[in-house]
Length: 609
Image 1 (cartoon, one colour):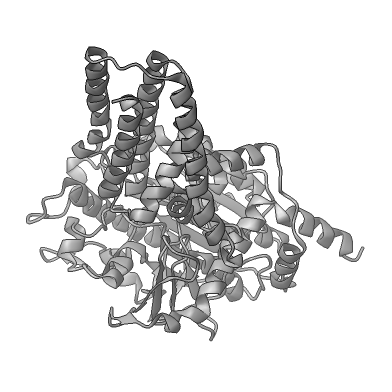
Image 2: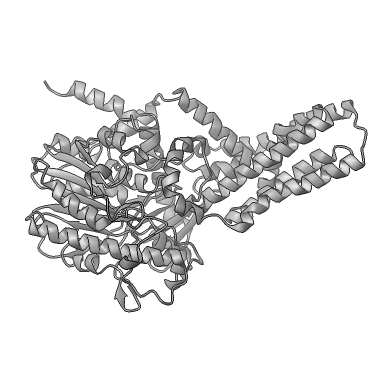
């Protein structure tokens, strides 16, 4: 058979994409098959013009590179529900310190993606034993025909899809582009955009974007506040552990008790994406959403944001960030300064022992951080990032205080042990704050940064929690605890209003009598329900939970009742779909185009002298 090597290459390439869909449980239908065939034809039909021996090595190398990128996408998708992007090159330096958690994503079947190389080698061996004469003229005809057919099959459905105005706007999800453009179409467009970003092309604001930013840039009320503010971010803390008992033992006894002293929000959600902990920090402080690929901390560290520390700084606060790890990790040293922190207490400012996981244990971190408060001028804003309960949840045997018999997953066991340890650290910190006379008059916040990574359907945590429906899994995965103690609060209370991390900075400013500016969130304590938006366009609004169908146009998806878990007509969620998408696009505009650098400069020029 003439050109058997090329036909085999096409078949194996498509087979690998189908295997990718099985490994990631992502969609694969007939239209997706043809869009991928089209892109492969456009990319490789030229190989039919070269000598057979050269062509075979080119195609073999292409299969190897394809498998390498696919298996990387599998591992990345398994954790983030997204595909790799060239934007992530700036985050490579972070992977070494969290590699233990990454290794848990690798599964033996993943390496089937390389078995095509053995099949293709067998094909080449067969062709060597059974040579066939190939006509250059036929090769040229096949190359041209293949390219034109690929171009036609790719262009027509793509043109139809982008004829819809909504689909032509900046996408909010990589996966929607993957389903519309295919594997190579997505990665090709991603590479093109990265080149654009490298040369600062397309960064000018459109008139519509400028109007949107002006519309939400409220004029701040600069109240003279003198309340000290302490915010503590708890690593990988889920709402599911609050109040949970295992074999008769409370996982978080100290946080459970704080529900009697603080405002507790059981319907609070993390809105992180690929940057995970850094996303939580950014969203909480800047009240903007994470970017769709990578982390704001590494990609946009020089951009202007009117974040919480900057706004409090203008109101006369001393501001400090505290994190007991390498100050350069996630580019914190530069980013903290950029968003308004006067001080950054890092690894060098904390005891070196005992190390639990990535850094000194949270007991030493939180109690030492309270000591650092004495060095700050009042009023102060202190932002503390705990770390012990970080994947892969390693903790010394002498610190394992729980009886976890009946639990089989070692990662889940480690997670519960580290959560229990960090809860005890919170208890020690609260005792220290009370002993130092800080607790009563301060505004104190504890919240979880993101889920544990152990919440997928079928995981032991989900099975033990009887979480199997879409809504159950959403609650398990996205819900993180939030505790807020306003100054002078006399008794704790449970606040049922739903909200997300984007709402925390406006809530803090609200409690201080200040109005936020250039922030997308809303106070959790006002009378209006909050729209809690997630990076893929899903959202919760009161009892509604919407999940977009990323294989279809914007607006498609499923609507659920949070209370009952039942399917609802899409019309129930439709009034809020566009608003959710617009919030994400506006946030992307502010971040990626450094929009606030222009607006804040104009504000300064307009200010009275």
